[in-house]
Image 1 (tube, rainbow, N blue to C red):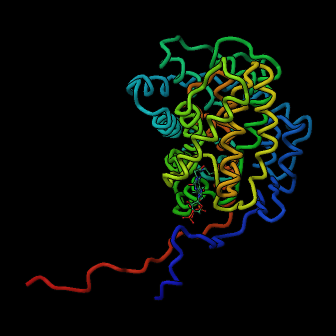
Image 2 (cartoon, protein in one colour; image 1 turned 90 degrees about the vertical axis):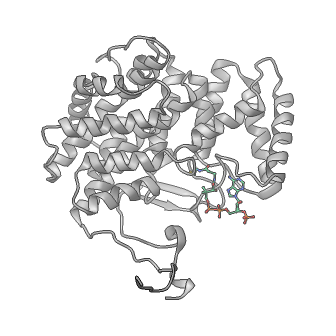
Image 3 (cartoon, rainbow, N blue to C red; image 1 turned 90 degrees about the horizontal axis):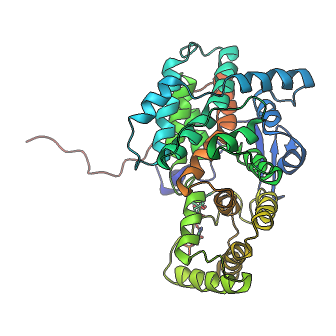
Length: 379
Ligand code: COA
């Protein structure tokens, strides 16, 4: 086996077909079941996008109404999940809480071992409905606040924010949150989705596959990047009293130092997109609205300063995590809740891929090239 046969990181390998989404780095586009994600983000609810990803088509009014009423009826934090979360330390990472919660939900689901297509859709819908309460409760317990019960008169995004903060969010905030949910929902064979497919390929169950995917998403080279972006902002220093220009100048100087020290700056670069991430303009639009809504021009200064300095030095473009991190920060979320929020969205894409993998399964098992010590024998 030659070195050329070894594709570290599986770079450039086409591992299977998928009809769920298409990432086209040349035209800088992302399609969910054929629809450009920007069009979906402009006018569709996250609930509609979830059904599109699972079924392949946008729902009829009746289908959407039925799913919305299911989702509203299944939002309360599961008692077993609450008990399990309460056993976890307050200083563990919220991704550990999320991973544990999904595992507990799986162990308690009546269809846990049923992997028929009908059961898979049912379990995906349950996870979609149940997961926001996990994120909201975890953030509140870390803030020494009591749990907020869900409200069935609110839609998914309104209720997510309600359970997290105990007050109704402004329509602009709800809309920016919805946009982020739509944009984070699906992105072909990224590391966590591929993890979910690998687990499914052994004929394991849906909750096991999602639990494993959460482990993959936790890493800073993948989902954890949206948190890391905020750590960068914090390191530079967020100064509310500062002008946009002053903040931009400090951010530029920080980036020049970081690149001179050969640091990887989170929120920039992408394995697939080399000329910019197709989701960034839409998410940046949502961030701009949050900056205007909360009157925080200095955040725009930090954002622009880093982006410009990176572009000038290395021509590396931001990825979705770059505008998403400061957006969630402005909404009031704690930084280490950003990746669990990403899970709430990506549950849709993961479960769509789990169903697709199961419908046309082949065990995923690559080869390796041995480079250890040559054969030897016990004396
Ligand atoms: N900051 C600084 N330099 C970066 C960079 C970043 N965020 N991303 C890539 N580069 C540089 C690398 O240092 C390398 O430079 P070199 O050729 O001088 O060594 C070059 O660009 C190629 O990078 P590489 O890591 O090989 O690209 P990749 O396709 O394997 O990696 C990522 C893609 C996403 C892992 C990488 O861009 C990264 O680590 N980004 C930060 C994490 C992040 O935001 N992840 C979220 C992805 S949605």
